[in-house]
Length: 220
Image (cartoon, rainbow, N blue to C red; front, side, top):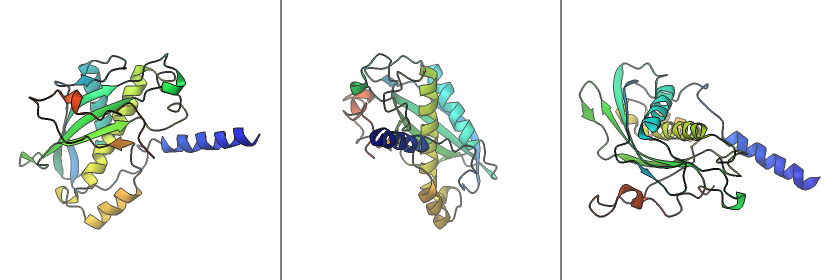
């Protein structure tokens, strides 16, 4: 009786980590209002052991997630967000539980001030996002979720990771740094990891710059 109760408590904690926060008040982003929302997949790579997804499907999924998160803002300055989908893996069904891969999405984000047509970040922000932990991801979402559900979950995590990146740069939106820091500390971070140092395009394709444990869950 004791061990099943511990397992139930652990699964309950994991579900809590997967909470969707879009119904909550948005984090403070000062003057921000969403202008252009552009997602490209020209150089997208599929990581081995993955379900198939087309570039058009990823563009639609990520654009929707960005619109859902950033369309809530009504500041007095437009900012354009551009995202490149670099690589993905969608956990397939039929894999033994002990070897169940994790779904993951690698993106590069950029932001522009629309009025001045100025790119605000000197280099693209590279992020890798995993599906949030839940009772489903414990056994691998290839067994519990459809391909479309996996893409939606990863796109949600990607948009949330971009939001946290914006909070790390309050000067772009005329936010009090202390307010931004407090919001960042109070915001639940999505399961993410940073890409390693970029590999020159002539030396290797995008996929080869990804960490070797890409299909493993991030450390808690």
